Length: 192
Image 1: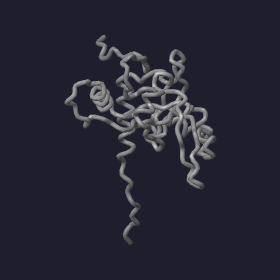
Image 2 (image 1 turned 90 degrees about the horizontal axis):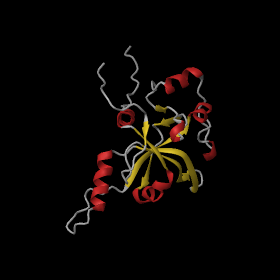
Image 3 (image 1 turned 90 degrees about the vertical axis):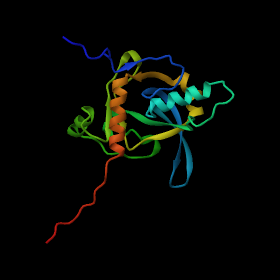
C-alpha cells in the first residue's frame, strides 16, 4: 500500500522559536470592550489558534532577527490573527461566552453533529488529544481577533501547548477563508 503522507496525528509540538500558523495557546488574556457602557473587560480565552499565514509569520520573524544594518521593515506585521477555540460542551450548551454576559444558541444533537463532522461552514471542530492536553474544541468563524505581535510573543512560551499538523492547519485556513469570503445574496421576490 502506498503511503501518501508521513503525517499521522492532528497535533505536534515544535521548537522553531517563533509563532506558527496553527499554534494553540491556552488561557490567553484579551481586553474586550462591552458596547453598552464602553467598559473594557479583561477576559481569558481558554484556547486560541493562530490563523495568520505562516509565510507572513516567518518573514516577519526572519526580518526582525536579521541583524544587518541595511534591512527594511516591509515584512513586519503588527498583529496576529487568532480565533478562540471554545470547549465543545460549552458551545453545545450556548454557554461559551457566558462570562461576557452573552447568551448564545443551544445546539441540538443534529446541529451539533454537523459541527463535529465539520459540515457546518461557520464552525471548525478539533478532536481532543490528552497527550497535548487538548480537549474537544470548536472554533466559531464569526469570532476572530487580532492580538499585537509583541504581546503574543511575550506570552508565547508560557501559553503554547501544541500545533496543528500542516495538513490540518491548511484545512482550517481554507475553511476560515471560505467562510469569510462568502457572498450574502439578497432575497429577490418572484416576479408576478
